[in-house]
Image 1 (tube, rainbow, N blue to C red):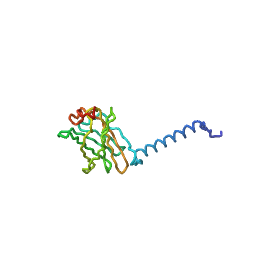
Image 2: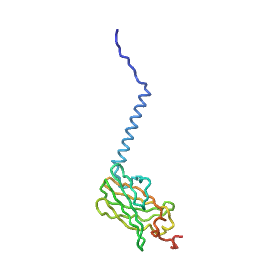
Image 3: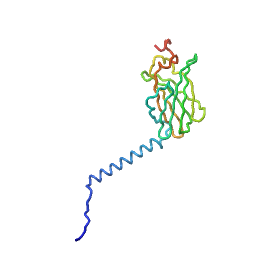
Image 4: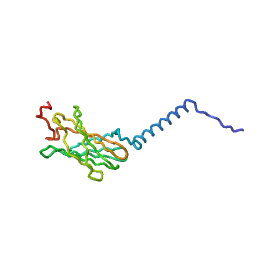
Length: 178
């Protein structure tokens, strides 16, 4: 009795589908590698979503900036006569060169100037400022925090309500705000 090997060939369509699947996996891995490790843009900000369920005025919020770094942002109410807000950013996992914060009205087209925070060392940045003229008419705010590090611009946003700030909103009686 002679033994022979039976040749079973895969259909050509199956070979094509296996090739397309492997190419898709390679492209997806390249994209993820580029997004998390290789992208070092100093022009465009890579935005990362904040953690869910945080209340900014109750201890702050945090967001992961990629796989190996994070940012925490805290906003403190104004307790002085000038209604100055104090904000604090702590960056972990990267050596930040600078940190900026900009407040944007979510329901109205209101922007404050971009505020550069001062480094206190060990990834801690602190700053003070105001939401801006006419901020009493805006209830929903977004703080955009951008970190410049050796890996480019990374950022996140943190939402809060202006009525929780109390007296820190200005312009309620200013005629330019009507």
